[in-house]
Each structure stands twice: as C-alpha cells, then as structure tokens.
Image 1 (tube, rainbow, N blue to C red):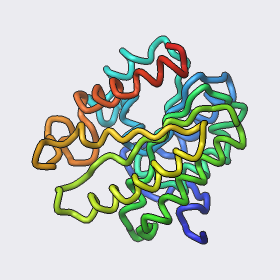
Image 2: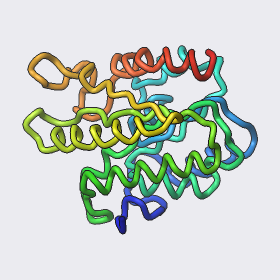
Image 3: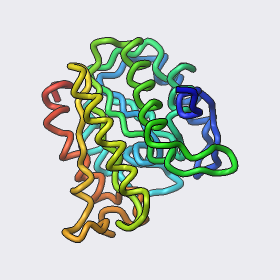
Image 4: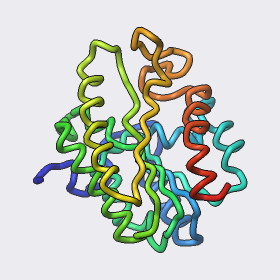
Length: 229
C-alpha cells in the first residue's frame, strides 16, 4: 500500500523534547549493549519511563517494575508509524535480539496536521505490520507483544470506532503468527458508560501514574513468561 504510514521518515512534529537528541541517545544505547526487552511507541510509551519535561507520569512504575531488567524504551512523543520505521532503520534496533518487544503505536496516525496527513485504518494497520516485519527481519525469534491502541477522546468521537476497527485488524494479524501476541487493555481505562476514567487518563490520551500501573500489571504475566523476570 502506497501510504505515508509505511514510508520511513524522521521527525514530523514538535513536542516536549528534542527528537533528534533522543534518537542519538537511544541509538548509542542500542549500539553499546543488547536488551532483553524493548518498548517501542509514541508519547504513551515515552512517558512510561518518564521525561523531565513532563514529570509524574509512568516513571515510578517503570523504575519499580523494570529496574532489574535489561530494558530499552524507544517511545518518542508525537511519533507515527513512519517515524518508528525510520528510527528502526537508522540505528535504534541495530544488533538487537530482544526476547520481547512491546509495541504500542498508531494513535497519532489517526490525526492529521500540516506536516502529515491523517491515515485511514487500513493505512495505520499497514504501518504497524511493516514495523513488526522490520523487527522480525532483524530478530526473527523476538516475541512481539502488540498492544491494542488505547482508547482516546470522548466516547462519541470518531477516534473510538476507528480504534476498534484497527484493533480488530491487529488481533487477526497477530493470530496468524506464533511470534506476535495481541493484547487489548483498553476497557481497563473506561467506566461502565464507556467514558475514559479521568484519574487514569487525565487528558483522554496519556495514562497517569495509575494508568501506567494498569499497563504494567496487564503485561506482567507475559514479561514473566517470555523475559523470565
């Protein structure tokens, strides 16, 4: 599919940090050692390990859960699938053969700006599939824990239905591979009426510390099985 979602490109948007400095730092880390677990994604993953510019998100949970694990966080705020592909092609995954990759990407492709067009659900799926294929070309034995896109916005916004459609595609895709597992924890962030619980996701996109704890607890059994921690 000829879509920007599958054409690797570097930084597109300005956000709360220096994109190129983070890329250089993460690339250096990837070159210096191998990691058992690698998280890949956008700001939701980025803020799991924390960032000094936006404190009080997931860093306490991250340090508690993963301080004894050889883990690398390749989450970059505002990234789309095409940005992740570029980063993986440009040093961030070089020499890596992790036991497990936790992949959570695609929500930013749902929105368009003057720098990038909004992607359709099939286009976003194609971008995520391309990332999985790239990971397995470099490291065929890596287990990819493919996270369903987290809910965002109000329940009456178009985001919700598009995310549901995308997650159905991702689930079906993962079912075809013994090296990809799909996990959708979206309902854990919602109340009975389908609204996002504010204390878990205050801006209706990014988890709070409590939200990150939910994510960590949900993936813990897979961590223990695959990464042996």
